[in-house]
Length: 384
Length: 251
Ligand code: SF4
Ligand code: SF4
Image (cartoon, rainbow over all chains, first blue to last red; front, side):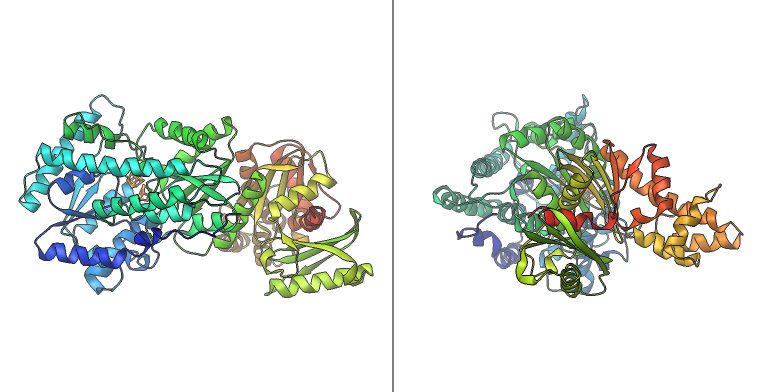
């Protein structure tokens, strides 16, 4: 069982950040700053900030906005897509009070990743101007990198037009440097999770990472430093099977599965996810020409939208070893074809390495919580 | 020592009393609306059936979907672990366990009596006892009749819907087309077999195969399973109580 006897004060900085951040965005808007909304890790933060704009993530993790979204979108679509779209609709059409940031963005910088998102963006554009950046779908192709650099250059133009500011190499380098600093801090934090008794739980870590692209980078980094200081000195008794979560992102509001795992006695030590390692693993080369260095780094993100994606399988096996993982919970959202199909190959690779896998495919409703508990219990009993 | 295992299933609640690892008695009652009440009732009835006083009971272990509602249990365990233990004891040669209950179905692979892999279908009634129960109603026969009727079919009807609601209307249209009752019955059974065998194939069959759960009492289903898997299927004497039995053993 994981003991919850210690209290991490700095975690509240992340948990309670919401109202402050909304006020900050409102103030920025008053000062004439442009707000950019994003929905994917392939859109480099560095370029947005180098342009003097602010950025906020629009990935929806709550189930409430889905009803509104289903007036426009099919029911059999990934809940993350529906929740994100529904949150914008809620703001633009009915002006609900929750999640006002969805209504505050001036431009959405979207990306051509999965089919569902791509087509949803066409509808979204009616409510908030949406620019869709293209992505090479085969990252190992010879000209994939050059193509991606061109796309980032176009994004640069779009952002310069939006803000009226010029993006210089000096500004880019400055942003790259501080973003790398954040990545290093997260690496240091994950290092602590390799301990036999990690000082931070998976559910706590997830709450931190869900804020990564919501808060302004400086504030996120500042809070991270405080958290790391606190974690370094605190000892915590935690035990239980060591679990890696791998799969779809868990956007803010979506805690269902990690909460069940840790409440039932599992210990989440690493998440191979966009609210996990994929968000910070690789650093940007600070010695290279900035746009190229950015493109190289971001193209390495092992998302299941890409093919082939062997690098993701390699990464999962590597993490399983480094974090001394007893079992993997493969987490997918319903109708996410990329991650659901890729499950087979991940499962095969894990089987060969003798690492057990539990697959959980779910949505944002609580309807299947009891069933998930049974599976998780059985999995943990099997690992003990 | 006396121990009691209670399997709080969605459709039926099972209780098994063990005296020094031997079954002293068991009971199967419908769960109804309230897991807790059914658990208490099964517990009391099985004790009186065995002539055992509550104070003689050493430990109580609960399993099954409603296990957390059995407040008087000393411990709870998932039904996957419980079935693996129960079947492992009764049929030591079994390494693939198929359990089809009232509301869910699962396949468990074991090694030295321990679970090494499992799959579960519990999101809908497709491939479970409920599926047969509903569709038997559309045929206006009982669940037992469905099984025996299916045995005489020479030409099972194709039921393409996995979904219980759609299958029910499919049965109605087959009847309108004057398809023989036994052929529809056999078709229905094939449909749930298909679902379970695909789970078995996903995990990889590991001999021997044991079949447990309420649906295993249906001879038509057992026969169809043996045909689909091309292997003999072993049944415990009372296939419905292996979960509760395993739980009692796990104490
Ligand atoms: S899972 Fe893929 S599409 Fe989704 S945020 Fe991550 S990189 Fe982007
Ligand atoms: S979880 Fe899958 S389907 Fe949903 S937005 Fe991400 S990649 Fe697309």
